[in-house]
Length: 384
Image (cartoon, rainbow, N blue to C red; front, side, top):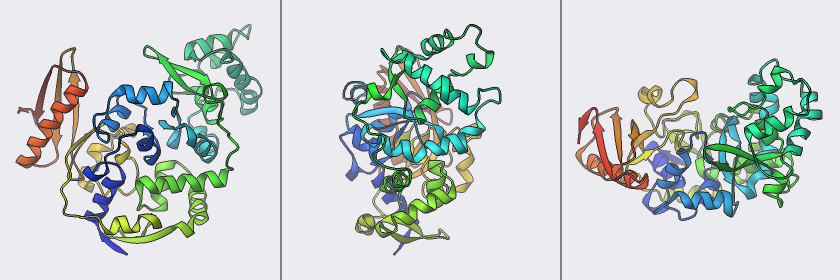
């Protein structure tokens, strides 16, 4: 099967709940299909859902995270924070634990950290014991653990870094997850208390990676194994084995002008065939690290090569982006005071009049979503 780049882009929007026919009502469904909502930045998951769910309110996400606990916040693919369906926790845990401890994570641990054996024998049990009674803030966990030592080494004091530190390791081990914050302070809970019905042994490592690849293709296919590697953080051999394990459920499509064929779920073939490449889709103001921007190594389906460095920046930063008819057409940011929000858009090229009208309407919608009484939109420093 051969499709055009335009068909691929429109199908990708459909799979990502960014076409009018694919809007969702349930935050857990969206988070599941997108293989988690990126949550490094506090506002990102809310704006990702705002773009995909009609009449979305932050309370819907808070209920799913902290009342129903149908979503859970933890470190997942590429060593980054995500909100994932709680029912999928064992898949992510078993698929990605080795990724962190043997691949990505070992490059991020300072050399003065205690040895792996010391962490496993002493520190991890101390952390789980500290969390035995209730969820705690990071500094509270640190104080409880350090109080067990007469003269704790300075290296121990740096274990509880705001960047994750040893709590990131306990999360990848399936010992702890993020709990409801206190004000702006992050809290952690024991997994066995926060989600007592989770069975970490539901799947083994190979099964988990195969199921993760199936989930990935549900939200990001058609895609290559290299795309899956870039998105997940797995090694090439691990990703290729996962693809081999589910080969019977996959088909290949050729996308002009991609050099190599892409994998797609067989169940998605007819949906791809029915995609109307000429249908115009509405514009979106995607937040930093939106899932649409992070799913592939080859980003041609959403952004021209000439503009990629303006979106994919140094130190792994991914800019908030203006999406017009499925293509990234610029970046945006905002400043907010108590009553007013000012939105700045920096287009890569001239934006047509119809899209400008839609973008102004969208800016007003975001202003209302963020409880601003006044919205001002600037395009290349020219007030609209």
